[in-house]
Amino acid sequence: MGVQHVLAMFGSTVLAALFFSGIGTIIFYIVTGGRVPSYVGSSFGFIGVVVSATGYEYSPGAGLNPRTDVAAGGILICGIVYGCIAILIIIAGPNWIDKVMPPVVTGTVVMTIGIHLSASAFANATTTTFDGWMAFTTIMLICFVSVYAPGMLKRIPILIGMVIGYLIYFAVGWTGHAPRIDYTGVYDAAWFAPPTFIKPKFEAQAISIIVPVCVVLLAENLGHIKAVGAMANQPLDKYLARAIIGDALATIVSSAGGGPGTTTYAENIGVMAVTQIFSTMIFLVAACIAIFLGFIQKFGAAIQTIPQGVFGGLSIILFGLITVSGARIWVENQVDFKDSRNMLVAGIPVILGASMHTTLSWGNFQLDGIGLPTYAAILLYQLLRGWDSIIDIYRRMRNQKKPAIEDANSV
Image (cartoon, rainbow, N blue to C red; front, side, top):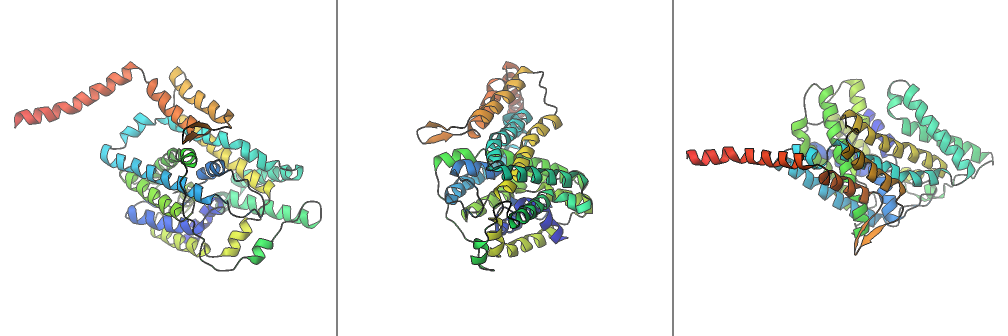
């Protein structure tokens, strides 16, 4: 069962740090007291913002991002902010989330991230004509596996699509009709060695770009807690704050060593739905397997040989899913777009995210096409709430104070 969960998250973690995903899952298990069955692994929500913050351009054999330290610094601060949200939930309860970031805001932020990153995904996919065809092939493979594959194979479409796309590229390159894949890095890498740790570096621009991803993490955790609770017929809402703290600590520990940000995995929820087994011990087994794989250096070097066209196709799928996830939040929460306030709160940030390819600077503080729309959505919603909403909040505050005054008078 543990191996199944490694395979389930493998489709998403394959491009990130297996080692830290294992460590993060163990942290999550401890913080939640083993009450919430979930695997914690690297979040694709961070990939685009890291690329944007560091200026990294992927190419086969390019090696590690030379500004990984800067990315790690931004992710670490994001983890701290995410943890602060959990503390607020413990102190004030979860209802305030809907006041500050209702579905119209969270859906807008998630959608904006996907739309903003689409340009880089398309650029990767169309570096050459052959890359464009390989991106198309990879996308169609993933789509067909997602819809038509039997049983467990349907749970790992990204992994299967990437592997088949890679093999097609390899075969065409071997015949001389496309560039051959360079395996020099794989030959030079050791079989077993400790993971490479990198000390975080903190830059204001990277922090301002990466921190808004905590909204995505929050939306993911909320959805996953409700989904697992519904499947297990055991509500888990009371563990929301602890789950977020576990996820935040996993992100902080991972980024402190130069690893990626983490999140709970929807893929593993699919495995639980199929098997109807919700034992949290299974995830500890999966974590140990992932940690072991993290020591296989040739595996990491092999990942760096993924052709640009295949990687571009993967990126289009992933960023497309992020975009649609934002719309899904709107639909599932029945956001009323007949209300002009919701239209403005959603429309303006989405257009900013789609069109903004520069950075706005105020001294050391900088905002890009993800950060600005995020703050714009939150601010617009608060400004356009209307007097009725403000009066309603005031009345609730007065009603909360009355019992306390009456208790004092009775004494």
